Every structure is written in structure tokens, then in C-alpha cells.
Length: 91
Figure 1 (cartoon, helix red, strand yellow):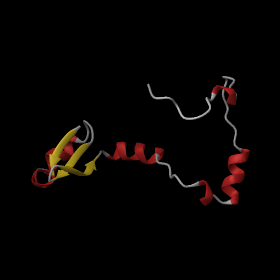
Figure 2 (cartoon, one colour):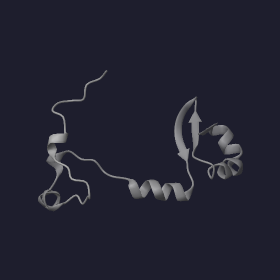
Figure 3 (cartoon, helix red, strand yellow):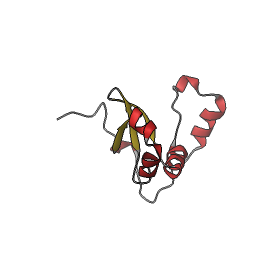
Figure 4 (cartoon, helix red, strand yellow):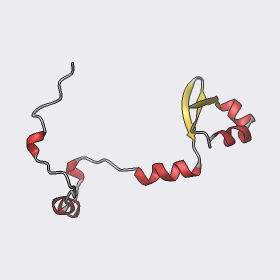
């Protein structure tokens, strides 16, 4: 990923704007990332996949009912016996 100090980005915006088509550009200030510049196409792809997380306690009745009604369609059978008990072990 390309990285550029904010001052350089400001001076040569056109150059860095062209580079976003090769991938995101990390903009730094005092050596720390402060922003990323991405193409409109990449932004749309990221936005479409964006999800909001919330604690279970914040769910309303409608959300809980939607979860209860939801189904997973797959051609591969599965069951909960495949899920190990407890946290995964670190080797």
C-alpha cells in the first residue's frame, strides 16, 4: 500500500489521486496513519459489506424475531456437534 505524508499529499493531490486506482493510499501525519484515500469503486465495495455490531441487549423484538426466523441454505449438511466446546487452543 502506498503511503504519503499529508503535506506531500496536499502538494501533489493529482499524482496521489491517480495512484488510488492501483490501491488505497495511506495518508500520514507525524508518521502515523490519519486517513486512507480509496477509489469510488473500492469505497462502494467496502460500504456494501459494512455491518454494524451491537450487543445482544440492544436488539429489539423485531430483530430477535428475524434471527429466529432466519435459515441457512446450504447443500452441505452440518450440525452443532462440529463446534468444539470452549475457546480454541493456542499451540
